[in-house]
Length: 219
Image: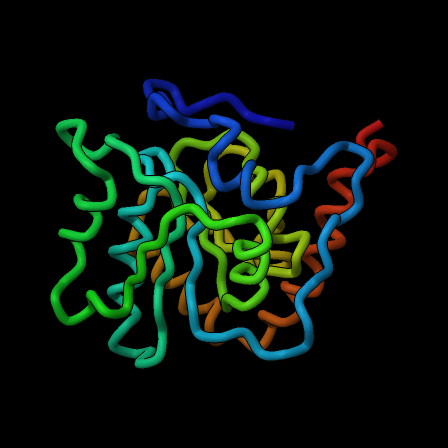
């Protein structure tokens, strides 16, 4: 089901390592698996957008940083939590976390929280608590992080590039935005945070993953 990379784009030098958060911090899916973690409870999610992956340019984190700042004024309680291992894939082979931090205006710095990679149990708790899990990659194949988050009943907002278009049915079990477009991501995040149908999309997500992981559905 995985798709090849966009022509002319290459992953960062440490992309897809087995110690990345999407592998180390969440359950592993096999073709025979049903969702391997319980879906979220009926408790309302807190106003938080969660990113949990390696901090690499192909992951599109800067698009998310810019989009979140477009929403902060209209969502006073909203925060963005960025969890993952730092890399040197920023321009000039510099620290990605430092480069991202410079994109945050002083007024918003207390609303964007950077954390190192966390144990899988902690990641699972963060996924279940967050209003939105965002996977803003502009280079992607078939991300385990998307499958993992959806299997836990998260509302995933993903870019419309690569395998996420095979995983997410837009408006049914998640939402898609134009890859690399921070204004469009802000629009879609706004929908995720305010749409009365968000609960239905969360409820549909685990079943979508179960069908994708069922070998009979792909026979």
